[in-house]
Length: 463
Image (tube, rainbow, N blue to C red; front, side, top):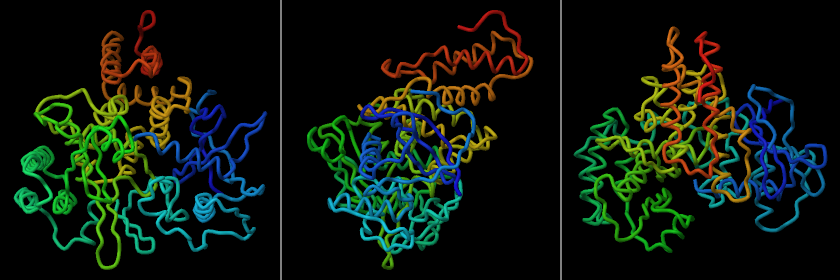
């Protein structure tokens, strides 16, 4: 039986829910009713899942890796049904068709899925919470090639050799692909070449073949504000990349002067083109994924991509898209040092990134922390989601301890250690909206606890 680890509790539509992760980092939810925790109705689960995934990209959260035995179920037709891939896929299909569904007691994952497209580009992104290989997904797997029917998924650039008949690509080939693509207007040809040159110069070990394949058919489409909102599904968007169309949508009439916000937006979207693609070959659809076999998180993807985009500049740009979440990840990447660089972000999955965090911290909490970051983001942008600051304490402690581990040494004075904490607070809180309601004293409380463990004496409490 799988073990389930509680990550946090949160409110949605005035109901209290608990989020759990299983051994393969799949989410599972319970709802508090009266004094007991109960399974969700299928409609509730779908509503919650769609709401959480539509956000453009309470009591204490557990700090320990506490596990309890839970059987994930939903209530369908008054019956508690085990939450298998087939159950949820078929239930979702029936829910969309507004049909009733009474499960069979022998219902299992051997069911033939009625809605094959659920594993493709379904607009609800319900596949974020499903797995096409549920029973075989080991924890934080960073192996990288999976097949389901006619779909072939690649999560690591090393596996591109299995679908491409060439081993590498250089800057001249990228330029040629841009020049040969009639869909790219003259306005953007020079811009795209500049991006290619910056990536190749800054990250010579970054894989360029996905970008090369995308550049052959890529189109940059200008839209007015309403058109862009429709394309992006977000009224606040300045740009988006749709990999199923291989198109970047941007706001019309922008001046892409180096380092300006429109420039950063387009670099950000090209960062997606660098890492993901969909190609049809030999009767199969190949998906080059930016996520991982068992870590699919849009917020993390966007934050890391934002950090990558501004890293290409010849100066330090602190004003970054997804500001708080980018700040968090920028600090953590700094702590990882030589064990993880942004060329690794290009070449590997999000699961690989989480595995590096686990190695650095000598624990298995990275995915939990990523989910806390995500729920903090969702609470800020998602309207009906509420997460208390108490729930986020493990995240603040996690980031603090990473930073202190890197920069605080035995024998250091308390004043010097406090300057380290000051630096951390400055980096985390740069340009963060006050509506996040982060009490920075928590970082200094973490400092005091860390110094006590290190034997660094202090006078008074750091403020």
